[in-house]
Length: 97
Picture 1 (cartoon, one colour):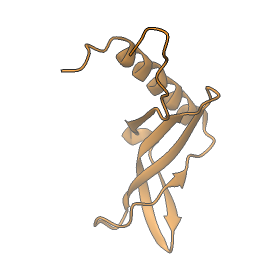
Picture 2: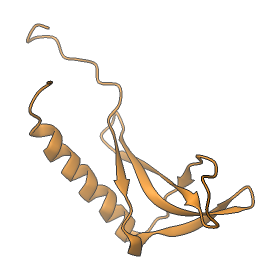
Picture 3: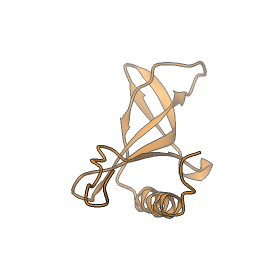
Picture 4: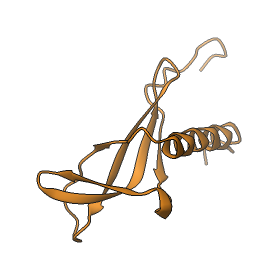
């Protein structure tokens, strides 16, 4: 690839574990889920988008269903900190093995 060509990066996404004290529950199709993971995406305009995933509170695997992330300052701070950490890790990459 020439130095003038810029690769077309179509997606940047990270998975973030929600600390125990920040987890919450939500219901989908009559089943309660405990949300434990965030999927955070960097949008083309530079903003972040996040969805939450988890497991049924009653146990078992359940369906892989996304949930809205509540508008809570501590969750927004987690998303921002995770994005900053991911940026630092990407910037320090060691190249392809």
